[in-house]
Length: 367
Image (cartoon, rainbow, N blue to C red; front, side):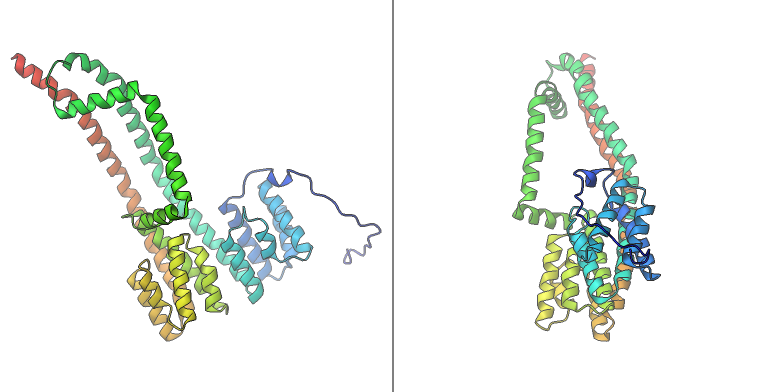
């Protein structure tokens, strides 16, 4: 108002209409990446924060995102920090984002934090898109194969039962007839058992002990467990390296980085490492005791601590782990399709053997 040579003659508080915040599409991770990157560029160019938020608001195409930027801009105009405004909207901004932005505001490297957040979300969205795109064909195979198997069990097998009912049937045929009878006569019971199983598993995962066991099992899976660990390690190393590079104390940087791993089990390992660092131990040793960081990563961190180059080495480790993770995901997705084809072939082959074997026995006895 002062720049426009205006003076308010009347000031009154205006209430926000209910329901405005919920209009439009929900804010996705890729939408936040679109916000973080340009906001970092504008701040790096010397544009004030309020004017940068106004620019982002005008360029936003998602109504929900535009309303979100407007709300954040209003809080900042009232004197709140950007981190406090983001923290008030925990349904959109994760605690990791809030903690990194708060550290950037306090230490004076907000532009770099926002750029790293934007790049991190873009890489995460790219990985998710790659996995989703690679799984389209396997999912179609599973759906078509399941429909074929259900059709055989519900229609073809019942037609064969009267013909073979008086014979001494082999084990595969008895199993096949039993599965067909179960599907045709007890479908409601199967549905109830399936629903109860899903609800029970969901309730178990929500509990503290169940969630802990699920996390441990997920991290130890043959292929996906390695991918999950690699993604968590890359995020941890990149964020910790960025914090240390900009002068954040290591204990505070570890507290922020622990939220980036995305796993309570690995976060507990990072907490143990923070306690060890607080008592004077180096960082590499407690990370190695946790058992989730690969030996080569632990060795690189140990060498970096001795050479006082931990911030640079952590970022290099994150780049290396991300490249390996992308190659691992590509290899795993290529193996999914033939594996599903083999499983479907075995199931359909079992059904055919269960039907044809007694027919061959009957024809040989007739001869």
